[in-house]
Image (cartoon, rainbow over all chains, first blue to last red; front, side, top):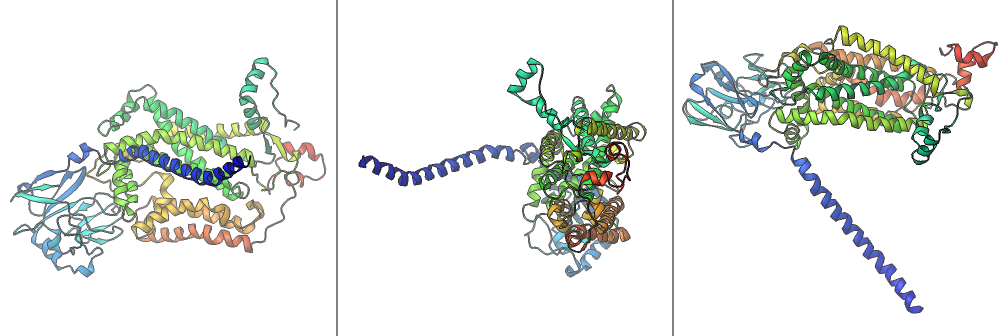
Length: 195
Length: 424
Ligand code: FES
């Protein structure tokens, strides 16, 4: 009789902790299992392989006349390629960084903190500074800005009135950032590859 | 008025079934014997109208899907195919497109009703919050549905709205890519929106069941805001409320039919008859009319994240109304100051809607800012303070007294049912 009582008491104290452990372990396994089962359902949302495969576009620059902005499609988005005139470049160069809303270059080909000088925004290399390549998506809510419009000789966004200058830098809100420069490189003197 | 009966099945088959699943009894107690306050006015018919519209939308939607193709290169043409080739396709599509607008008209009236008569106050907080959830689901459903025809407004509306999420720091751009399933709004986006647009109405239907359940637990509010105290204060749902709701529905359907048959494109936008073009944004993009007040708020804040938070905040604040309104008196009838502020607030909402349809420049922006501030001040400052400073009028002791109290002499008991003496 006494022996039995001790056993009951012992299982109660030891049993509570062991039960607790089992509950927690079971619960944790269940949570891990549920998370593992949920993951494929979340992961399928991201861009799929066929979308990722369309990631580069080539542009023939010889077809673009001075002053002309050409729109090409890259990853489903418009990219503006602008053959800028000397006056456009001059104006962009004369703008002080302190006058900009966004002082960072937003150039995927440069380090993230590069300042938004015209040099850092335009194509790199001798005689290539006339080329400005930017993603044609307003950094506010994603409309396509209209070229050669607005007070700063760059783009004007019809949706909420943001304005960009001749280096694609935002000069009037509500857009918070300069038009992004996509990763691109010169395949030859007259051809670039975006992406 | 002795109709507060309970359901007793007589037929043996029904008895057999009822003892296994008391479904008919549930319907009977919810929609036949259910006591409703005797003084409900026509503003109370919009709950029924909304249920009807949900059914219209689900039925017409399920049928439209039989002819629609959710693919970026075919969606636009398949909608035109519905309009031109499918037998009565034009009717079904216009019914669905205008039905969405009707749904929102009804829900806005329903919400204004709730706010005016204090229907959100204890013990109806959960009922109110469930309603707010339905409203949010409706907004999501309406937005995704507008994307499906894949016209210019569809495409750019989707672009602008999904881009709202890019305003959130760090995770924003990734969220947007995952919403799109790509680097821009494209076929993957169309497909997932289609899937969700089909799912959400059924979720709405589920929350509607909870909403009605909560309503039947706490009972309906009424124009006096006084809880029914005796059986004299209520009438059975059938025939009184069913007939009244039915009449409201018929009137509403006439209004709906007028849009459907005479001005089916009035609430739409001509640009949506241009196929989506990812390279050109229409000169003036606007969302559908029922989002315009929120769109105006978004644009009146010069900061991107701030604008987005303001817009979401305008909806979130509704969830807290039961606690922001500190007054003990429910109905605006007995709250002289609240009544005035309520109508000012309604005007502010309509004003914001109008501003949302205007270009974001000059005076429109300034007006938008003032009205946005007023919108929030109404909830965050005016409502809490009114409860402290307002001196309410005398509230009637019971619904019956409010209805019959003014009829001098005569036979009050019978006059109550026929005489419309609820002007208070
Ligand atoms: S999307 Fe360009 S200003 Fe809003």
